[in-house]
Length: 293
Image (cartoon, rainbow, N blue to C red; front, side):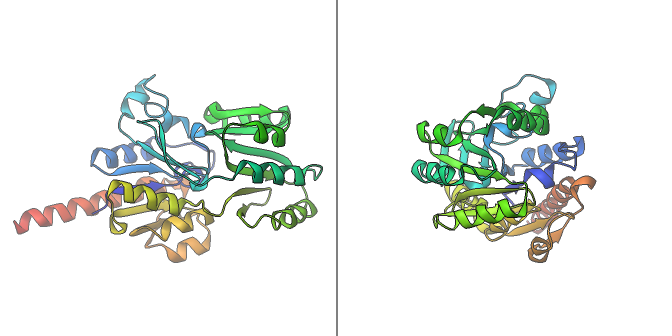
């Protein structure tokens, strides 16, 4: 019986235009109403969660949509597993941060390398320079509540009262990426995930899987009672601690090979289809048990 469903956001719940469809959010609400603990598991920081699920949960009830979202979720895995937050109690349940000194040292090493820098600190998304912050707000749209502009990232990190959840470096050329990789080699306590245009850097102790495992243990939920849905390399660690592993149709091949089930793509509401398949299976098991009794 599935008791916890961890769901990635970008490329999974969100379609190619970064939207959650009505059908997808309705399916998630149905799962929550059936008693399944829904856990957004994202590379985003907490306050950049998609606004359609943030309404009524993270931000309180301010609309009809917010009223429908009551009870949708309580726990969030953010910044690629660097933090697990209980939004109801407003407290951190698990964290694996980059030490302040390490983050500041890396940023100083990267100074002058023609990189755009960003960071997740205290559940906020900080971008260095107004052009970068403006671009971030345009990309995130209504989800940009947690985006802030800073002048000097190294100085901001060093002066912050909080440790760093994640650093991001945007590069423009292969040479810039290579220099960044060489610099990161000097910091064995850190790991990085690369896309074609940027790198996400976080503690080696941070992963979605480790965060999910810690949350499940706290809730008394076993591996067999966990399902997860994802599309990217950063979702592999969740697969390692889940009893039911679902890959999106648009997922990278390595994830599909480890999945128990491959659903439709994010542009064809794959999450909604997967969630309803889980619910149908749970109803079947429940009916079977009732018949036995």
